[in-house]
Length: 387
Ligand code: NZQ
Ligand code: ZN
Image (tube, rainbow, N blue to C red; front, side, top):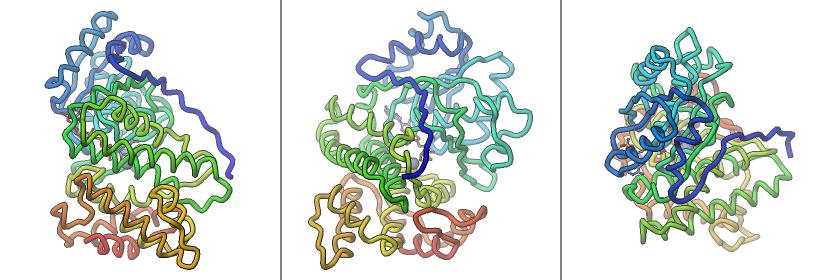
């Protein structure tokens, strides 16, 4: 096991009706707040009204910035930064999913920075401070509600890049599983693929002697798989929604990678896909992850066989571990298909004529991944396997 420091200060307020505590939670981080949200789902569901009345009850002044799109854009972030400066905003409240939260984090990091906020996403600068961010989560998926990450797309060049720094980790996150009843099945499925991917990125590691985190990863994956069927049968199954919501946070709050080095190549390859084709991140991962697995499996067949056995219940064949390993990958792929996700580029309507460009962009800063290092040629091969 590797040395590690684990600290996660996001205060999680979990359960039914908890959005009514938004005002009292927000008051701890600021009196003048930017209320940031997406394209209107929160108005259609009535959440907006409840959040606003909670803010008013707590005496919080706020201004609004809506319009965050999936794969959030840099231009809106810049608009948000200007608004915060102009109105002396002290904190940002993100009401929505990963896209809204990531946009809020980018604004928070940019307010005190004199340069271009995109510098943070290009690795040219690191934010030393940020406005505090609070969250009311509406979709379990990205784990941004308690993560150090923010992923933004720059329209010019369609570059989708991540910033990872503890200063943007949300101070609180309100997680009410009832808020996820209104999710369209496709969004639920994309969220499931994303949280599973966050676990699998950590699971496929070269670090030895990490039994506890191996088993935490496996338990979280199995919980997600078990409860997925339930939410597709009954979108208002509170307990199943609750399991998924907590799993999405656990998948990406740093606990599951304590003492081990994760891979993350699949995520970076996916960011090229959603950067150019604007598909949902979870759908892109359902395409990339199985192809990546088939490509790197030989590197550690035993680990893939363990994944097949402990997560998918496959019997280990000691005489043909590769066969067991492949069964695990097939199970994952079939699972993604069964919940309505594409597992091939063609199924998502993505042609193969920009594979070279994606492989090039993905490796601009060097090879990807830690489990297996991947250069441009290998990434191209993986994308071709996913055609
Ligand atoms: O914009 P609105 O109208 O709110 O609609 C959203 C959006 O269209 C809708 N939605 C959300 N909650 C809903 C709902 N519709 C009905 N009822 C509800 N309760 O769902 C759509 C998708 O929302 P989005 O926020 O884009 O989804 P998600 O949470 O999957 O976020 C995806 C983004 O997160 C990034 C991804 O790259 C992608 O840009 N990621 C962020 C990470 C992080 N910050 O740590 C890590 C991840 O790996 C990921 O890269
Ligand atoms: Zn992700």
